[in-house]
Length: 210
Image 1 (cartoon, rainbow, N blue to C red):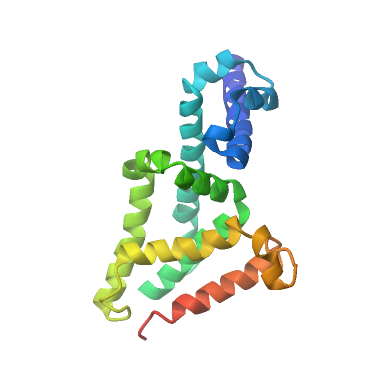
Image 2 (image 1 turned 30 degrees about the horizontal axis):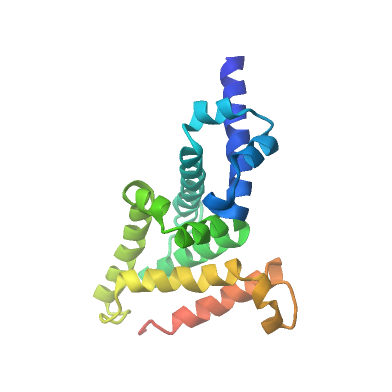
């Protein structure tokens, strides 16, 4: 039992350090030796648990997407709280979840940006089992809103999801370079992030017909 716990601890340590390094430098820029040094393990352990640098990179992305999925699973219809009264309210709750997750998981945002710059290979590999199910849930809500007549039928779900993601991710991925637009204040502090969320909600409220 102790060996199992030690193995899990080592695997988690590698994954945590790899997440930190890959989020800062991307796949190509990250050195496996840097990850090994951060984790305090030898190369054999990485190959034993993850097969290769590529396998470790995939595992890092999988963990982040699973975390996002868990947030949606627990926060979209949280136990003990009233369910959203309408499809629109459900969509806004989903938007809030993605915003709050991005605000508190900067490594997720950076990894997403790196993967996009590197051709999206990892994201494509995760589509069927992780990314796709999340997308289809939101797309189904958007289609339901169109069927109810509260959302224009001319708005396509895939483009709306991209718009949702873009308006949130650009803020957090470019926060430091955008500070001058806001008088030099930090855009990652809770108060600034909350103001951003309120503005995003007001923006997307305009697309509804009711």
